[in-house]
Image 1: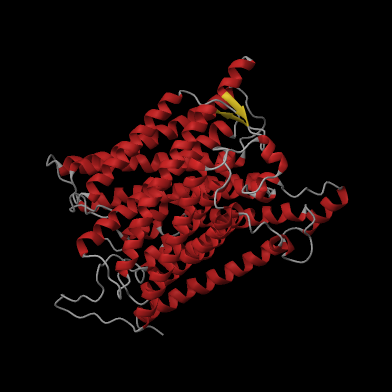
Image 2: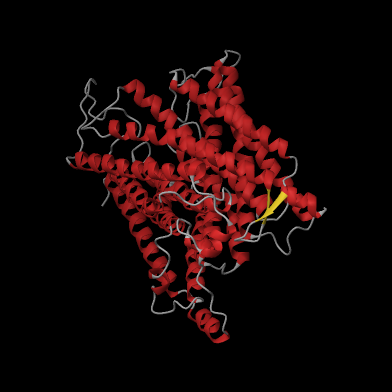
Length: 574
C-alpha cells in the first residue's frame, strides 16, 4: 500500500501509536452515538418505572407501566448494549490490530438495518401495539411489525459480527500484528462467538413467532420460553465477555496494568464460550415442561466452570492493576497501589466500580439464582432484577461509561466537556445502582413480586400482606433509582456535549497536557525500569488483591449458605 493511499485510509493515534482505519472510526462513532440515544430512552423509562414501583408514589397506570417496562428492557438490554458492543468490535478488530476494515459498505448496511429495526420496535411499543414486556412470552401477542423490527436488528448485528471475524482473517493474512492475538481482541472475539449463538436462537424463535402473529402457525409457549431464553439471557453473556475485555483495556489505559498470565485469561474466556450460556436455564426452573434431569444438569456441574472463569478474571484484572502500580513505585503496605490510583479519572473509577459491583453483587446473587434448589425462593421476585441490575447496569453499563471517557478523546478527538461533573458521575451512578440492586434483593427476600404493577392488590379478591420493612426498601429503591438516573443523565450530557460541541483535541494539546482529558491519556505514571525495583515488585506479588479476593469469598460463602438456611425454613426443617 502506497504512503498516499495509507494516509487516506488511516490516521495514526498520537497516544497509542495505533493506525486507525477511517471507515472503522466512522462506524465506531455512529454506533456509539446511537447507543447513547437508546440509553437516554431507557433512562427516561426507568425514572417513570421506579416512581411507579415505589408504592407511595405509584405514578403511572398499569397500561403505561407495562408499556414502559417493555421499552426500558429493549432499549437498555438490547439496543444500548448491543450498539455499544458493535462499536467495541470495530475498535477491537481494525483499530487494535492495525488493519483495514474489509468492505465498509457492509458495515454501513448493518448499521442501517439495526437502526431501522430499533426504530420499528420502539414505534410499535410506544404506540401501544406491543405491551408484551421484554420477554414477549407467547401467548402475549404484539403487532407483527414488532417482531420484524427485532429480526432486522438481529440480522444487522449478526452482519457486524461476521465482519469482525473477516477482519481477524484480514489482519492475520496481512500480518498487521506480531505474535498472538491481543488479549482484548481475544475477549471481543469471545463476545462475538457468543453473539452468533445468541442471535441464531433469536432468529430461531422470532421468525416462527412472527408467523404466529400473522396467523400462519401455532407456537407452543413452553418451546418459546426454552428457545427465547437462549436469546434473552445469552445476550447478557455477550455483555459479560465484552465487559471483561473493557476491564483489561481500561486497566492498561488508565494506570498501565499488566496481564499476569495471558494463557490463564484466555482459558477463562474459552470457558465462557463453552459453558456460560448454561446460566440461561435458571429462568425455566419452575417450568413443568422441562424435566428434573435437564434442570439439574443445567444448574450444576458444567455451569460452575463459567463461574470459575469469572472468578479468574475477578482476580487477574485487579491483580494486574496492583502489579502495574507496584512497578511504578507504589509498594507500601497492602493498599498503597489502590489508594494512589487515579480515582479522579472517571475512566478508572467507572472501571473499578464496575468490577466491584459486578463481583460482589451481581456474581454472588447470580450463583444463588442459578442453583436449582435455592432458585425456588427467588424466582419471579424482585431479587431477579436486583441481580441483573448489578450485572448489566452496575457492571456492563458502568464499564462502558468508563470506556466512553477514553473514546471521546481517542476516537472523536474531543476534550471531555463538564469534566468536573464527569469525575463525580461514576460514583453517583454506582451508589445509585447499588442502592437499587440491594433494595430489590431485600424486597425479593420479603416476597415482593418481580413484575406486578401494584403490590397492594387494591382491587384483587384476596389480600396480600407484606412485612413493614417493605415500605422502607421501596423508598430506598425509589431514591436509589433517582440517584442512578441522575448519574446516567450526567453521563449522557457529558457525552453529547463532548461529541457535538466539545473543543477539538490536537496533538499539541496532548503534549502540553491540557485539562478536560483523562489522565491516562496525558500522564501515565512512569514505570520503574530498574532491575531491583522490578524484582521487588514481582517478589511482593499481589497481596492487596488477595485480601480483596478473601473478602469476596467470605461474602459469597455467607450469602450462599444463608440462602440454604432460608430454604430450610420454607421446608420447615431445622
